[in-house]
Length: 399
Image: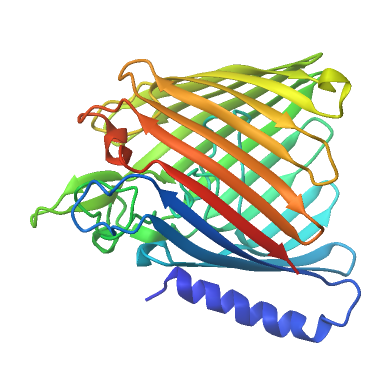
């Protein structure tokens, strides 16, 4: 039976044979990175079966090849791996990118595996629906590679994109020993699908993006298997993910006025059992060269609304306010800080975080982050993270 691991190795073999004779070619760009990440949990685990270790370490890496040829063609591959020291469900072998691209103005054709990002907001990206979330990254910023055929038409009056998505990537969940889970482990192997085609349902997405003066916008439509599963109980008192069929219409909009950026994302989703609306809207105000230095300071403020009921996959972002800041030092090391708090106005809980990132010499980068959860009640979806406050340090080398 076809699986994504088969696709992974098929891509690796194909690209090995098509590029192995070209490594001596000066047109071939390659890059290798290796990283080690350690999380320190200050509290003991909440749930039975979770590892009592306060430190959780993982190693990861990726190898990137970019080969342009015949003027209009290129091949890109970016395989990724992660090995978790405690939770085997955190282990991952993936292709972030592995595709052939043809470009001939005003047309682009991409066939393979790719990672696509849509959105403008800081705290959550509602319109970003193409790729599945990599659950090994708690922030949700990292995505799994998505098999696709992508056709783009780029006239002067905007960009039209069509995405045909022939294979679905399931979400992974923390294992029995892992953190960031509830009292019962979710059994990924027991996944069920509304579509009789299961993993092979053909999803389709459309997008049009353009700008007018200082305003940028995107209109999108998706129909297919939801990237968010509904978690249901099974007959053995366990839990399993159920992936329903959805259709979603989205708008992302950003307007720049001097030092102020207005940002909005809105979706209307025909979900598992209802049609609902969700939105995030706010602004970013930038102060440049503060205190006569090279550093920039930004204030971030957004409001999140989600109208779904409990019959839909649950979200942590229903009636939340996000307030934060960004400091960009603009130094030789590209150092930056990002911090903020997401406060739930209906359940009165909050998540506070601080992130620092810098480059060490030319071949290393360092990321340090702190995340704390507070105020969650037993009925809140975020209650399962109540004891999972953590400090994370990640060191990456680029070869």
